[in-house]
Image (cartoon, rainbow, N blue to C red):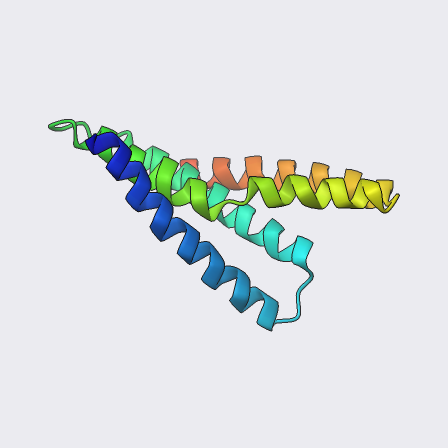
Length: 124
């Protein structure tokens, strides 16, 4: 039950943080796809950073609770995979195939690079 609560509390906090970040990015007049791209890349960076730091904390089972709360709950809710997939679907429906392919490859590439950068930065 504690595991479920850890993920749930992280998810509630992460969903609200995502909403606030998204609204702030919209105020800058960025497109919806760019807002989602920025949020997902930032979340990937934080995931890499947190996994590298959390992997060094191994006392009293505290590490597992941190992973559940922070990595799965919080960062899982900050990232917006379902919105990313919907944006791809929407581009395909509007027959903007080139835009969909660019969004897909740029998002996946930047997410992996951000996660890797965060991971290596956390191991310094």
